[in-house]
Image 1 (cartoon, helix red, strand yellow):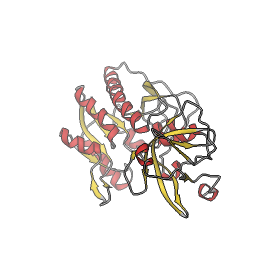
Image 2 (cartoon, rainbow, N blue to C red):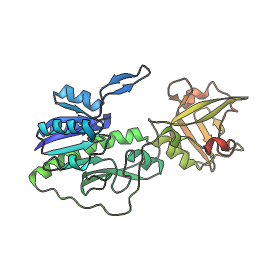
Image 3 (cartoon, one colour):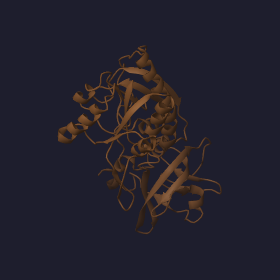
Image 4 (cartoon, rainbow, N blue to C red):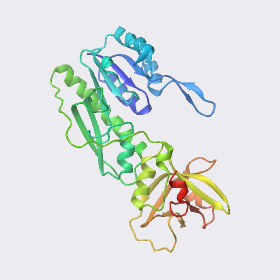
Length: 326
């Protein structure tokens, strides 16, 4: 089969590499247009676009397949004469006329066990919601969001201290093999797609507003938010520096504390020990592994703690309710 690969971010690259390695005929790549990256806002090709150039593959860049620009993109796709499309985190919905363009349609590698966590951030929301297991699915694309019948799946357990970035990297590697095998089965005529069953849940794109840390919540809720938002957009809160001074404070990783910790401190306050940093939450504490003070890079929490006052605290919905109701 002649395959058109559609993807944009780094987690899509293992799938593209796997298709090439396994001998699939990839005739071109569809990806998003160049984006402004870094402080200097330099226009930069997507990671998938860069990898496609290295592989010598034709690259089509488009943010939408509708309107006049979309018509031009459809013509470019048709000129490659693909039989099927393989999508991994392309970043845009394909309209029905695009889905109908290819003889064998389009398949999508999605990083959840559908119908759970349909949407842009399935791994992040699985961790935020403290799931113990997630996975990946290859399914037939439809015009609606992540609703098509499923060809194949894999499962993966979630550890309590894993970040979304780590889990997504693993699923990208394992999912690449799943996608390659599914395409082989489709080519052989042995693949069967099963309609999704069960109540769907949703995984919208994470924004900075959604990942503000409130230590007045239960410890597991806070830990899930921190690890689910890592590395991007990064869970954050407001850290009091003394007096009226306050600054943004990111936490990059946290893990649960198994033993009971007796303390008279309130949610939002820290317990600075010789070998660990604890954040007091509503019903217990969590250990902070990585933090990023305002104006600095991410660092080990214990390194940060060596130069700070033991009286520091983070704002909570109890101490600063107006901050959490906007």
